[in-house]
Length: 101
Image (cartoon, rainbow, N blue to C red; front, side, top):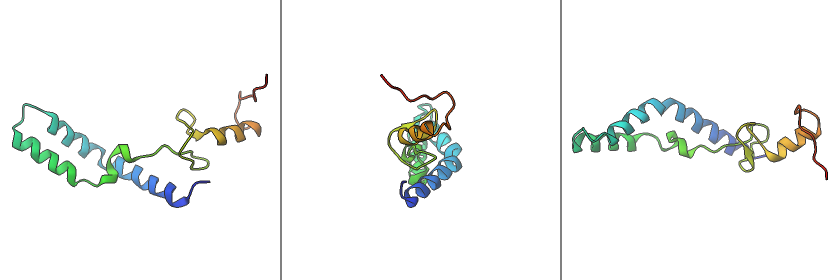
């Protein structure tokens, strides 16, 4: 199990990303728009910089929903390789068979 503090920190980041997503995308579009004046684009960059750091989607970490493990994560299943193997061995994942050769 991962530290609860790390898992909770990631959850609060996810909420912030969701909350500021629209505002962030508008400001980014303004900053990239070359039809605007340089001053307007610079002002958009300043407003973007004043948003909370944790509202940036790159600060999110994919974590296993079962254990909170940050590495060995399968996006499709939203769990780590270790949790998948444990659940597969217990017969909780339909169609998953232990390989042997």
